[in-house]
Length: 450
Image (cartoon, rainbow, N blue to C red):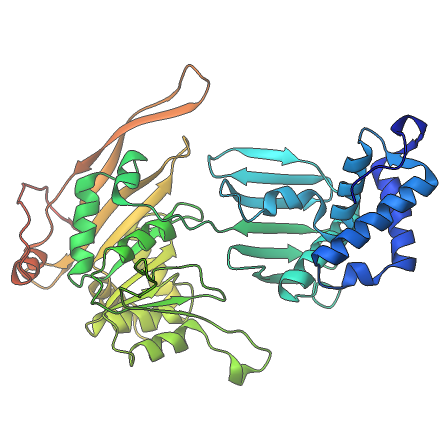
């Protein structure tokens, strides 16, 4: 029942959070079950009716809000996530991250590259209470003095890190980073139109990947690595079996069905499992070992960041097609980064380990988010061995900036072009030819020795 039983002109008005404190105390004393029970249409209506009745009896509403707006906002505060509700809406696809630096400093990063300060919490305790509710309701995680740092997933789409009292000054409430993962199912034309890469670059990565060349998509956080890797996985022929490995929760959704629901392709999706009991932990390394026995044609390790890195290169060096991502600042910096990650699993000498990594992942694509908020493949490299057995890294394609300016609308604009620098190696050409693929040859520059 949404009928308002009083005239707004006759009501007392208070700041919203004073009204909240008053109503919350009343509801907690008399109808606490409506808050702790799982939300249903019935409990939702009962709680709103009780809020409405209290306001009517006390002739009260919040300043600058209508009666109905007061009821709706009170309900939201008492059962949902306050100022975060608008930005946690699962229907939204325009938000990348919510950063809480303090109770009075909440910023939202949007997918168009802009950052906006949004409505803050009413105080440190309000901030703590809302984040604790979020952690507990969505994933049963607990933040307290014995566990002042919490990391995990709230859902399939949301990663969260929270730091509370013990590592953060209690006067600011807490600090948190809430990462919204919106994997977009983009086609080749989308990447071309968005200037992520040229058609020739994407064609090359596709044909190499489809013909068994393992590769790493590298870049910084938010550069679009996973989105592009996800696209490459969709180009794998349906008869080939794909085995994906992810951390904690599954974000990939590569299964293709027809209009009758029949599965057309061949995909196994897996994710790790955490546990306080070490015997029950299933990490990426364990999943990789299992994948090797599952007859995969393609193995996708969503991100290399620990012990699984060594297992991934082992898989690639034993004939499996492996695609993965990692954080690095360039194509050439990717191999030392992988080497450091592998150190958690092996004491192999540095030279041998580096050579194995180059053989395992001969192709690296580096994606960067430029200052104009456009994600571009900045470089694609190939590592091959010359006639003397020495490894060489050559640039196949690169993005060249011609002009970096502020346009008439006051926005950053970067003008550039994708340039082909070198052909792929003779070894890759022969491999493709043996598989029935022939690429057009062009002149290239000399390879660099490293």
